[in-house]
Length: 278
Image 1: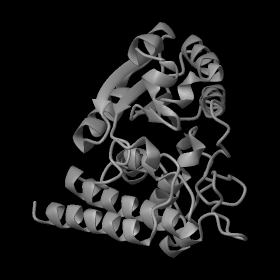
Image 2: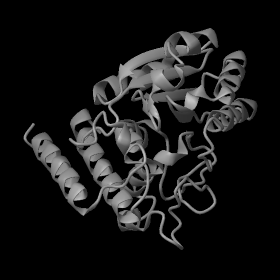
Image 3: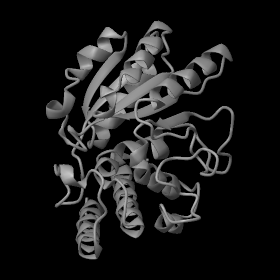
Image 4: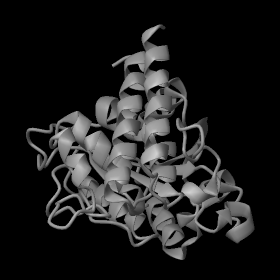
């Protein structure tokens, strides 16, 4: 897909986030929206995957370490063809396979159950090491939150990945600078992120994480990097694409009501129409 097609697809992914969280009357829209462009690029352009064969042993792997942003992952998976888009409306409903956090046992396309913050990167490094030991070509991608990386286990995993030169591992930090209790700096600053990852022997790329061309160039650079893992620090906007959610910490974990949902979908409709004019 070219960048314009990917931008249009990202709008659809964002619509899925809004409708699913609204239907659930619970969930985490802010961080799902900030990472929507990354989800879209990974599933529609970057990763070697096949929705018809979600357990292919040679597929690329993805771990959503910040598992609470499952609405973003589910929307990308649904639009990619892993399960019906209509099922997004069952998010968090009793009996639905679309739980509040990713579940690898019941959701097609989910490679790791996650949501206990800090643990996902350890799982991803294990997958990357397994590929090396088995002489497999698949790559592993892991999306972390900037609040999440205040967890010590993240840095244990980073030390392990750097030491083992896991150049088939790509970590993406969704750096929207807001977590549940406020700004990342106010809660417990992990900055500077780039210098920290570099100290663990990572190749680091800083980008605008809501710019599709910047995302494309970063992932291409990551694939070309040999002898060390890559960390992409994606500077994003929390609530991206929905006017009243952008930069607002209150939308970290709150569902829109009927009126707010209508406004959000209208914002996204206009964004899609604008892209169709390009």
